[in-house]
Length: 228
Ligand code: IYR
Image 1 (cartoon, rainbow, N blue to C red):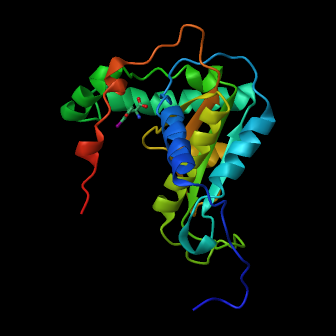
Image 2: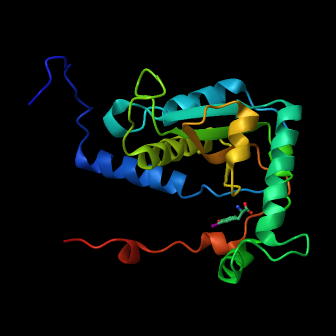
């Protein structure tokens, strides 16, 4: 059943060769994205971040409630506060103070090929931090009480589309998920019904940026798909 209020929808009717070419071009482009942990402090225009947030905000989502909020952090003071709070959590996670790590040995072993640790200088170096919040309640009017649906799925897709846009704009990104992350709600002044989901760090890669070779091991199509 169509709702009363609807408008026609169409897309350009490409021929198959063009369709395949575009899909493969995009796949090649997006497959060059890397999670980058070394950022330049060079400025990046705010318009790029605005466009990326709007791209993310066009994601499919539960009942079109758009259950997300993006707190954009640019000031040196706020970035420093976020870095300090995140590193405090990470020191406990990695057991950097000599206490037992909160992370299991299995988890730490899994992270070893990435070379991550409790130091997060990029949270201050990169020009932009986009702190992503998931709204458990609020509806389209953000009334703080209407139930939202498929919140994690919706916000996850929005983050993916935002990251794709940032990559297209030639920016490096890093999804940082300090754990626990309640401090982000306080530092960004967000309400209790919002759950911080991740920080998307965005900026130019440092001139000497590297990525771990572990990150290049991508599963082949034959492993990630089955065709029924
Ligand atoms: N939040 C920690 C640990 C971490 C966990 C996973 I799973 C990663 O893929 C990367 C890091 C940190 O940011 O160091």
